[in-house]
Image (tube, rainbow, N blue to C red):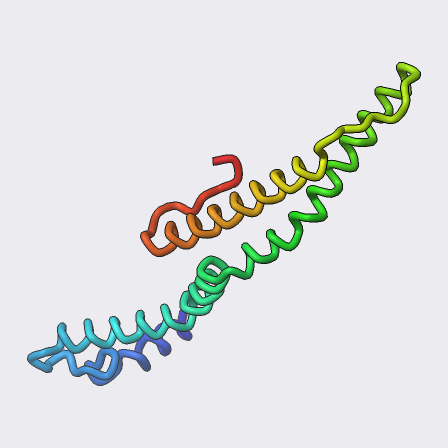
Length: 140
């Protein structure tokens, strides 16, 4: 308790609050200004780094480009799985491997559609961040 009193007495001795005399005619405005400066310094130290990370993550094309780089492999894997499943079905019936015909056209269409959706999502994410709207989430 004595430590608390001495800390309080040391901070508020000589009728000074935050470096301003209690008897100053502009006491309230000066203390308020000092509080605002301290709040701004705290905000800059605490939240500005977080805002920078958020801005870099949302406003650049880095995430979109990373997703676009994964598309061809994902499409190839999906079509290979589909081809294997079709071949397995055909073999169970005693038929030769299935010739799925226009696979290349379907792969190209799937890849183009996926890339366009990723680009649209990236644009929507940037616009939402700029307007203050909620960021799009998966499944919406």
